[in-house]
Amino acid sequence: MIDTIAGMTVDERIAALYERDLTCRTLGITLDEVSEGRALMRMRVGESMVNGHGTAHGGYLFLLADAAFSYACNSYGPVTVAQAAQVTFLTPAAVGDELVAEAVERVRSGRSGIYDVTVRQAGGKAVAEFRGQSFVLAGPPRSG
Image (cartoon, rainbow, N blue to C red):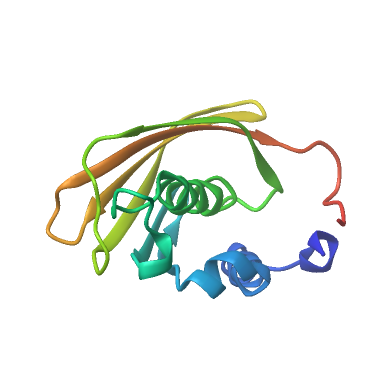
């Protein structure tokens, strides 16, 4: 529950968020780095993550990018959620590829923010570009 993290440092909040992030942990998505407005996450494409063409399903690429976006926009402490996001798929990823998603804040204004995420193969080739718009929830952290 989100209100159980009140009074923690940002690092403790991020660690608590990741501990509750069953989706990322189940899929083996690791949180490598977080700093204000930035996050780096990693995922290896498994056999169950491919589509009918034998390439990484776009939903998994979106999920990895969205996760990095989430940790980047929550790096300041207040509970922050996505209000919109879009992804552009650039090149296919294959089973066994290690993908790295790097989220970078572009702007924060009031309770809104814009973040760009590049998903790359370990060798550096861009697989997808993602842009997310964040919104800081008003009031104290809420449960649920």
